[in-house]
Structures are given as C-alpha cells and as structure tokens.
Image (tube, rainbow, N blue to C red; front, side):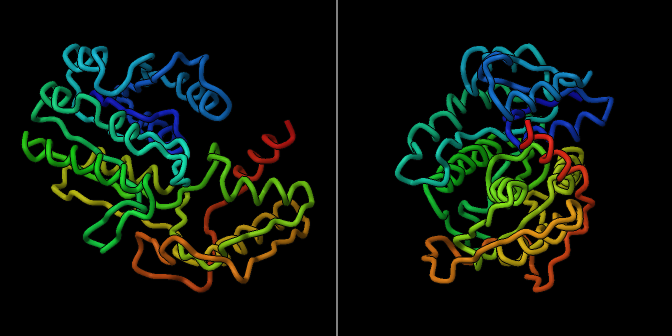
Length: 304
C-alpha cells in the first residue's frame, strides 16, 4: 500500500505518520514544502525523527497542487491520500489569519489534482472541531474554522463527483510529546520554573485527547474497510480548570513538588463555551495515561 501524507511536520501529522509507519507493508510518502534543513525547532525535530523510519519517504520542496505535486500523482499509484495539510499561521487571531491565502493553499489546483487520483483510492480529510459541523450544529468559531470548512467542502464535493471514497476525522484538543507551545507548554514551563500559572478562561469546556489515543484512532480510520465517513475521536470532555487540575496532580507526583495555578473569574468568553466530540462532560477528571515519558520530555526540552 502507498500512502501520500500531507502535513507530516505538524504535531498531529508527525504522530499520525509515526503510528502508520508501524505497519510494515505500507510506504508513506510525506510532502514537505521546503528542504529538511530549512525547518526549525519542533518541526525540524519531528521531521528528523520520521526520516529514520524505513518506510517513510520525504518528497521535498513540493506544494499541494503545483506541477511537481501532480507529476508525483502520475508517477506513483497511491492507495490512500491523507489530506492533513492546512495553513495555520495565526490560526487563533482573526486580525492576522489570512483567510484568502489559506483557501488558495489548501485547495490549490484541486480539480487537476483529483483528475490524477485513482477512483479506487481513499481520501482521508483532517478537520477541526472548530469548523462548521452540521451534525453537531456547530458553526466555525473564527476565520481558521471558516477556512477549514470551505476547504473540506471543496474536497468532499470532488470526492463525491468522482465517486472516490473518503473519510473525515474531526480533531479536538490533542496533547502529548512534541506538541506546539500552547496551554500545556505554558503550564509546565511555569511549574518547572516555580512560577504561578495564570489561566484566563477556566470555564471553557473542551475535549482534550492524548495524542497516542488519537493517532491510534487515525491509523484505524486509514486502514478501515468500513463505509463510515465521519469520525469524532474523543478524550476528556471537561472544563479547562478540571483538566488542568488533573494535569497538575500528575505533575506534582512526578516531580514531587507543589505548584500553583491562578484562575481568572471575570474573563470575557468569545468562543462557544462547549466544543467537544464526546457525548459526556465529566466533573471528575483523571488522566489515565502514564505521563512519565511526557514530563521527562519537557524536563529535557526546557533545560536545554
């Protein structure tokens, strides 16, 4: 089996490819928009780790829909297309996120791309919980969500038009080693430096899923023979505060130290209060995963 994977340098993309690479009878071709040595920081680290996998092949300096991309589709018969790519720069800031550019890059020359896709192939589309999801009556929360919604609609319609099987996975709030510098990074960095972490929106209800659980689900979706289309993997559905307290409890036990968190009481909530894949919101959060490897990763990362 040949898989074409777009977006391997991202946090989730890295883990998805890493999980798929454990299946030895498949080859995973990963596109990169630059040469490997042009990537920096976490993205460079992820790519270097994947480059050690025998069945992972990087195709460098290639962009979705360009001539090199369509030539690749003519050269190699791919069984599965993993459309995990998206422009994400400034994704959480409407004033800076470039909606027009994101739509162009996400779906560049897409009709020509689909003319090169074998009708027997399967397309796996990565979506976000923050875009339009009619079945859940969710609307896009920002311009990034609008971009993902419109990109998905274009891909879905072309799959249906060309009678190509497709599946979509809606990703919530993944966390784990090699993650971006978001909430958990902020918390752990402050805790390791004996600083008080301040949380501005403790009452948002979010779906935090460990990356190991999510990547195993992704592999199942890719390899599935099912006709099911939409997948909603879920982790811990709770308020930010309850999830943070559970993480703090794990942190304190691992490092044998007490840490502090200050929660804002009068924050303005601009996003939907509840945005989850799961059906049950829990009030007693316990993180089941062993986080020794996770905390050891941060201990090394933040001391270097």
